[in-house]
Length: 230
Image 1 (cartoon, rainbow, N blue to C red):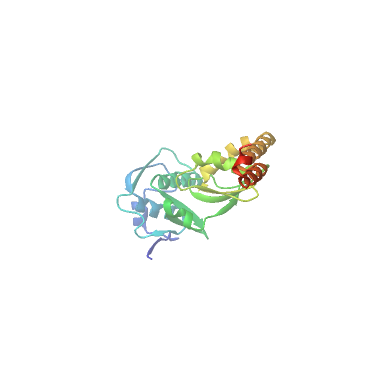
Image 2: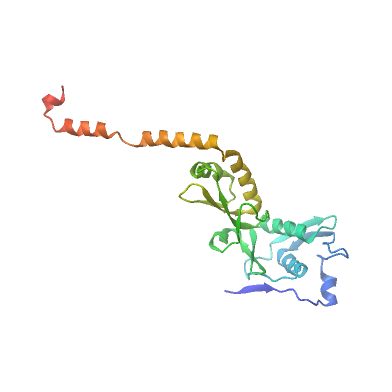
């Protein structure tokens, strides 16, 4: 499988500077820029130069028709520009995996089959990239939360619920996980837990057969038609 690798060199030629539209100003910020309908592959290349890191992706992943536009009217910190860049990729169906000091551009539809950075819910990057986050509930109401949260997930996001109903594993965009955790916070309380226990108990009574009734019916079948009618 061919992989295209974009490496940023420590020393650039003057021609590279002349052709760059993404630049760092004298204060170390990303300078204002207007990007109009630029090929995504070229934007990724210049982003790699800007960050001084390797960025990789499959050779045929990005087509010549994938183009982006961005109006940056004022200088921003590099970490803030990262989020603009991640958002642009997300709008075209791509995500960045930050692994071992390099960035790998992948399609959203393939993200669930790849190793993702793992975090705990007390601290994780709230970007438009897909990540894996573990969260521990205060009360074991996981199944109830699972049903409620499903409509709020992105197309390729998913939730894994452990058997203890207290541990949740999110595989989702960081920005969306942040929203989902805020929703969970409103439900993860004793009142919801008591309601959930009552619901489970009611459901159990409705689905479990009454064994005494089954036994009576079985005995009745063994009787003669005359006795059975009495």
